[in-house]
Image 1 (cartoon, one colour):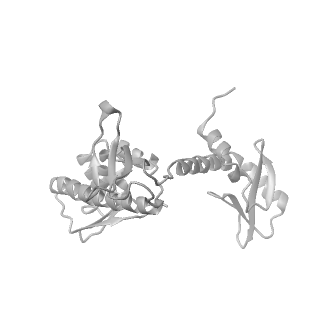
Image 2 (cartoon, rainbow, N blue to C red):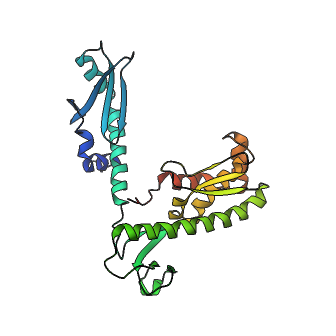
Length: 266
């Protein structure tokens, strides 16, 4: 028996991707029963989209159903690979959901952060890890010790993380900007789902507060990336030369950012 791959795991955990509720056609593909949503459209070729809701096929009105199914079979390897990737992503996102209660845990600067509600405090306090006591880094929130709604804990944690993010960004910008010969005129926090940062020619920089979940080395890569844009507003070889001069291992740091999954705040 061959070892299970990430693809196997993705499909095993996400049967709904193989048989989505929106499916209006089914056929056997690669030994699996695959359902997909077929849409007829004014177009010249058959199109395939694999997303969080499985496979969607868009076909010209004049193409017969056997022709469509045959096209799906020819794309079977690609379709199953993409479905497996989607499955893995959904598994990761599910694991990233936080049960917002006393004792909840989430990543902060690449390490475990335990959340505790402590009503006696005048402000939220971060307690560093105590390895000799097997205690992780702990955030003591200024909230009642019991009976706190999950949304209140979530919002308190988010506010604290955003405060830490701004302080960290300001410090790292100050550290790198002088060496790179650039000046930041304004720093804004972002909550974007798909973008970690941006920079404008007027010197303003926007950074995603969720970067505080990653190790400092990864956060630093995004800061350097955006500061480099203040010299080169593109992704040309000249731009990457600037990044490399400051951060020779930037490619490894970028991979950590790409592969990471941040907690879900909902």
